[in-house]
Image (cartoon, rainbow, N blue to C red; front, top):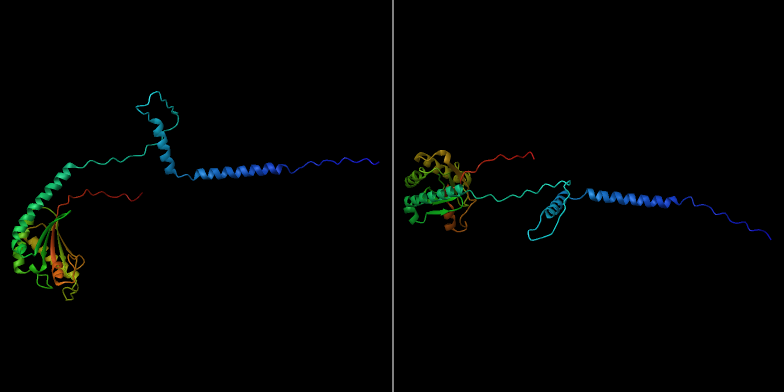
Amino acid sequence: MARRHKEEEHENHERWLVSYADFITLLFAFFVVMYAISSVNEGKYRVLSDSISSAFRSIPGNTSGAMVQVNPNVPIPAAIPFNKPRPSNLKSDLQREQNRELLRRKAKDIKEVLAPLVKEGKVRITEGAQGISVEINASALFESGEARLQVPAIRVLTAVGQVLATTDFPITVEGHTDNAPINTPLFPSNWELSGARAASVVRLFIETGVEPKRLTATGYAEQRPMEDNVTSEGRQRNRRVTINMESRTPDQVKELDLAQ
């Protein structure tokens, strides 16, 4: 009987591939985790870190026996600045109220000067956030399509200018028209007409004694109507000159740093 030869066991020389594959997988996972950590939102991390540090540094007053250990070697993150509301400037508020009271007195004087036009409903005086506005219907000042002041209007506006000359508030004169088009050699459009009417009033105020540096003439044409231009009454209301006396306190000019 023939002897069976014992089969020789061959050693597996490729077992290292299993360990190598595991190592590569772990290395890949490690780099993924490192990448995820590197993309953390720095702002959110700083807020979270500051909140945790503040919580551990605070010791409640009604807690007894509580002990918190803080590593003194760990740097304390910078606290987020808190902008406290600035207290109101009482001096500025008082000055603003005094200006408004002075403007109200001047508005009363102007109303007395314009009493005949007020009775006819051609003058309207209002108070807003920026000051006092005196609205005069254009029919009381100019002929239709003209920017030259009529003689009665010159007498009335001279008295108004004398009142304004005793103050130092900025004054803006606005010219307004209706939407009816105009096309003349002097006034190709309502823009020129409204601006010329405002300039005529400003020139008269300067002759009356108002300082030129306080005056501004502006024409708005038909762009700021008070009423609908569909009716004749609305168009008549929109043809007006408005004298604005501003009570705003001059702002402190600060140059912007746009280099950041």
